[in-house]
Length: 115
Length: 113
Image (cartoon, rainbow over all chains, first blue to last red):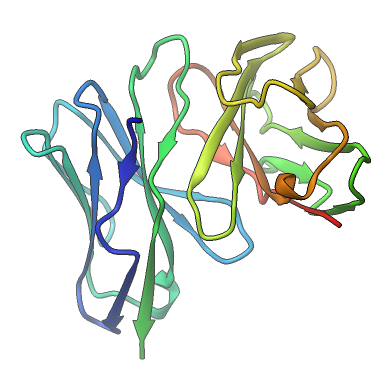
């Protein structure tokens, strides 16, 4: 079935380096994407979102890139810090603002920041 | 403003018992979503509710699972006759409307023994 999946299950980076987490989605009709951070034992925390009419959005130390041609999403974290260590999920909404805004989650990437 | 509150945080049930998971959305939020997360997996959508209405239950198992969001009080996810395969973390999220950021609770970790 349709799904959102990630290329790398685990990403290990040095503190201070930039991190790039990738995500592939299969439904070209999806029009809203969100990155979540989940620390151990906690619920997902919103990081950044992007609508399908954009290809880039920046936040504080994070940037999301959307390539609709190849149905690819990425999260870039600048100057990665130990506190960034967590599992990162991309999620999509297929009809944002419609009857239901259920999130379709990918399987997650574990980001491990080495001091 | 308290966030989404879920209780209990941890719940242990024997096979065949009932599990009741509670979710109090953020103040002013009338939309609630339930998700299930198996170890080392992503969250899977279960059900979407507004006050007194089930909007989308396409992710709910056909048997033993039910959800409600009454006019007063928290949303309840109820699992009857639990089996070991029901062991998972169950997360609730709320939003103010059909658009807008969904905020997640800390989850209820259900263990069936």
